[in-house]
Image (tube, rainbow, N blue to C red; front, side, top):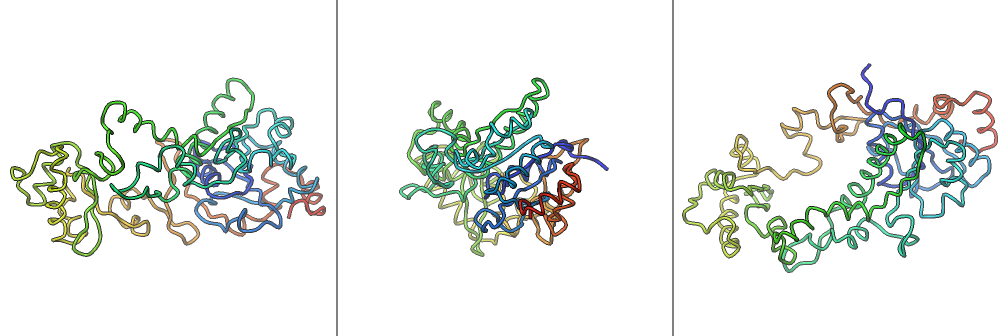
Length: 379
């Protein structure tokens, strides 16, 4: 059996929503063993139904408000390399499972904290969501058409890219450092911080004079006709990203447009004219027809697929970029490794919720399992 690169790493995850489960999904995909602690008697708000973000887990329900439940978490942590929680600052401490308490149990523990605003600062105790975090990071304001309000890019930038992905990165870095120091540490993974760093490239473009204009009037935000989307004859869309002149020339050639009749590619005064000419051309064929036209081209033109169509694209098929887990088609683990190849993900099904099997895999004896179960600490 080929093992993933994190095989042997054990993670205790306190159930939460979106960002932390996404980070733990990445760790599980890479081979880590995850024990998810659901809050006994909790609502769907803290214990969502099983789905792609929950794959690769075993889970147990624990009464975190009882001393016995807290003792159970402490026992799990003795066997763990990593602990992940997504509470507001101070909540884990009040429950008795904060960093000081758990590092006292296991000094080698990597303690990951996933929040929106971070562990300190004036907004730290406040509620928020992806749109709020990316708003103050400056990541929301540039997204949208000229003259229109900013448009939220789903909850991808704050929750997943700036949150869960940076949490997983922090865990990997801390595990690497622990090999040298022998000591655990606390990771303060804040979605606002992650969203801030995602904007690094744009700060550089601004400093270099390449992002001088308001929203919707710059090269990569919809102003340039060579970096935009165009409607097709069937009401669908094609994405165009031919920034380089040689690729732009291929775009015009495939569309049957004479470049000599158009303004210079990067002349902003000609953007409107070019957009109309290119748009008119795209409306003469369907999305699938244009996909065939551009299939073997470097014009940087692609069909705009829905999330439910993406698995059908020939490139995704060839790379096995999607897998079926528990009857649900979903993205396959990434990235890929030449030697420590990743196992196919498994759903968190009924067998994953077998408490005795889950806890035995974490080194608990039959006596300990029976004791935690009899007190109602673990259900």
